[in-house]
Image: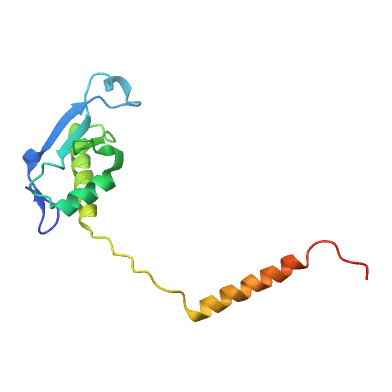
Length: 139
């Protein structure tokens, strides 16, 4: 089990890893060794995540989640498979932890009386400035 928070942990068999060739420069080994890791985690079918966390995770993941609800993460920063696996797993744990945070609900407030007066005063000041623009009469 991989701990996410005190109450949430995911099973290691929910995660599928495949190794692919990394893109970019890499010397002589780049075309021979598959060091980049592609991590797949089925968010929609995970029994260990509560429904609100699943919805927030899908919103946070953006384009990294498929229509079927599978989260795809790739890691290719390091030259070794092990370090890329650790980086991908850490990214998954961080993303799920971020999804467990319940956002604050926004409460609508009214502007204060003083701010209303300041706004109206500024509006009248701007109005008089604009009113006095233009050609001046010769009277």
